[in-house]
Length: 304
Image (tube, rainbow, N blue to C red; front, side, top):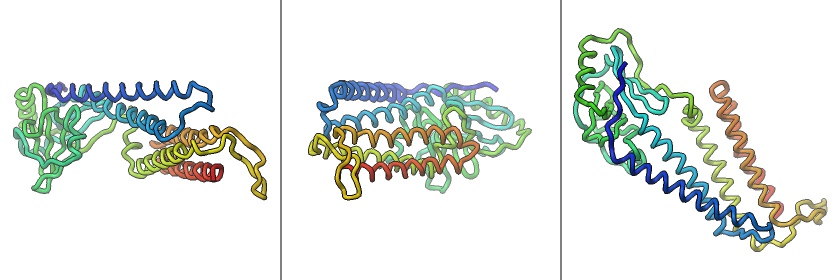
């Protein structure tokens, strides 16, 4: 089966520039954080400005990861045709369009513009978009849908952009006339490299986001009140509420850090287990949220 690379587009360079900017921002903020934490704990500049730097570094790293994926997907985007279907490849994934279901091949398709389309057009156009007719267009194109090659089925449309469009259409029409020898099901066959089933699970995503938000809220609140905490805080009290153990106030900062470590361990275990035990992988992410709540209670108890 011959593969056609996707047509070149300036969008890839815009995505690369954004990736470089995100990496640069993350490095800049991490260096500043590292310099600040290199001082003795008593001199750490903990407060809302420092939390803003930390949050900015985390968000920059997440953005860099997302942009790196988009750039990689754009560079590996390709198309193939055989007697049974049209195939779309990117980063180890494969989308299948059964040849027997293709009704027409047209050039260009006007799609409604949505705010989310701006994010889904970094590097290349990706994702599903509803059409006024009630059908859905699946975009796998480096060119705008209005300039893409569109494969129409009874219920869907697929926008693609092979570099040699005329040769691609000629090959497709030849295969079309010969007829399919095997019935295929339309859909996406996810690769194993990036653990797509795990990340696409709504329950998993929901609890991952909840754990992250809880951790950031607790850490942000703690850093906001940190300058007003006494130099020594009671980490243990007796039944009467009298302090039995005093520690430097910076020790309380390690509680959100410990909660983060628990969440990362559960995330790693969830990635490993999901294909065999999806329920167990989901429960691990639920446990991450519970851990965040327990550590939050611990922080409140100490600094009350």
